[in-house]
Every structure is written in C-alpha cells, then in structure tokens.
Length: 178
Image (cartoon, rainbow, N blue to C red):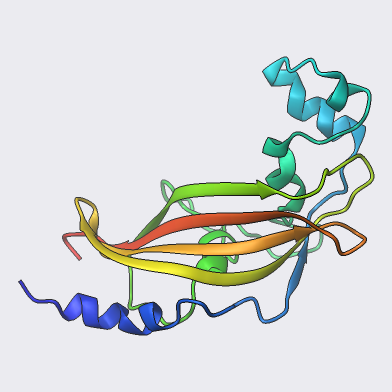
C-alpha cells in the first residue's frame, strides 16, 4: 500500500500552529435577544431563572449567536443543487481548510468543544475571530484516507472581550473508491 496520500497531506501537517483567519472577523447573524433565548430553551423545556429572567445565554446557545447568516436578502442563492445531501455554496467546511489540502471528496464534523470565558447576555453581539489549525492527524478509516483537522477560534462580544474559545475537528478525506 502506497503512502503517497500521506505525503500529499504533509504541507497541512507542517502548517499546524498557523492562523488561517487572515484577521477576518465574522459577525453572528443576530444579537442575543430574549425571543431567541426563549425559542432556544422552549423545546428543551429548560426552566431556569438565569436564562428566563436574567437573560443569560446557555453555553449550548453560544454557537447559535456566533454563526453568520447562510443567506442574506439580495444575495445569490446558496442552495444551488437538487442532489441528495447537497450543501449550500460558499459556507460551512470551506472555513476550515488551509488551502494546502490534497483533493478530497468528503468531510464530516468529528468533535466540537467550547471553553466558556465570560457570560453572554441579552444584547450581546458575537463575532468569530481567528482560525488556528492546532492539529492535523492523518488517518485511514473505513470511509477513506484523510486527516482529522482540529481548529481553534474565539467568540468576542461587542466590547471585543473574548467570551469563549471553540475547537472543532473535521475529518477531511477521499473515499475508498476515489
């Protein structure tokens, strides 16, 4: 079995520690508001005065408020394919690539971590900053050959305070038939 696929990933392995965010700040689609908190908590029937009365966002909602919009009025369509499992154009996994990866046919999220640093409350507007590659582990799995790429980025509030650090791992791969 040839290890050429491993050599193709070496530039990504060598890039571990680099920040690929280019100083970009990505603003969340909406500010934290009481209505959004209620809609987040309602299906969970999560009755807690910290969230209901004090307007403190649950940790599990942080990603909701830091996520940018997928589409904006007047923008180009993002759902451009009728294929099964088609992904929206221009978003998602592309934010978690270095540009150094060899050609690949698929990806999936493998892990997600949140390190809370400051409370997020009603009125806060979150922005995502940084995109540091902190690990790249090559692996041959049942879905194909590729790499588990771990990224770290921060969420900041409107006062530029870091409220949380996120880490997510994506498995980027070529399927066995590719």
